Every structure is written in C-alpha cells, then in structure tokens.
Image (cartoon, rainbow, N blue to C red; front, top):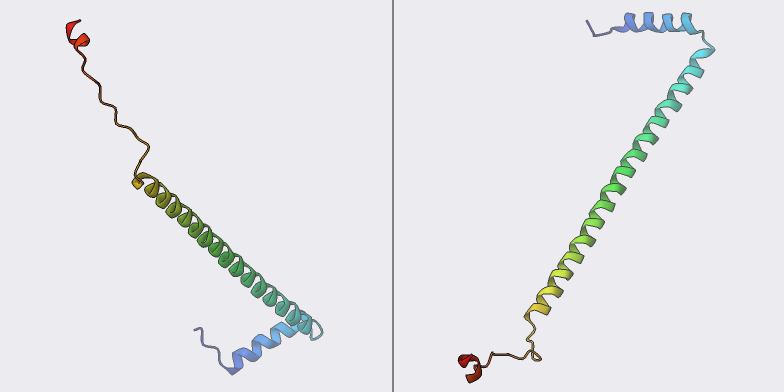
Length: 100
C-alpha cells in the first residue's frame, strides 16, 4: 500500500483524462505551475521581510546600545572631574554663639 506500480499510474492517468478531457489537462498543468510559482514568490517575500525586520531590530538595538554607552561615559566623565571652583565652608565658632 502506497507503492504505485506501472499499471496503477496508467489507471490514474486514464481516470484524469476521462474526468477532465485531453484539452483541459495542459490548462490545469499551467494553472498548477503558476500557483506553485506564486507560492514560491510569496515565500521569498515573507523571508525577505523577516530578514529586513530582524536587521532593523538589530540596527536599532545597536544604536540604543551606543547611546547608552555614550551617556554612561559622559556621566562618569563629569562625575570624575575635579571641582576647582568649589569652596569649603566651615561654620565658624564665635564667642557670641557660646554665650547666648
């Protein structure tokens, strides 16, 4: 079962010719070929769109990663810079404050 011999194929072809006629078989074959080609094109378009989407996501992720790195780098540079303008203010003890 499932293995077709020569006689079975002949019977199948004869049934197809009887059902559709000899003139319609080439039309059916052309239609089937066009359908298969359209399916292949659609499959390639979907693959192309998926690849484009994946590349777009990867590029966006790289840009965000670079922006984060630049932001972190900038913030650490500003934190480590010495503040030369800063003046240290110590409260002065005066005798007036102690006597009050």
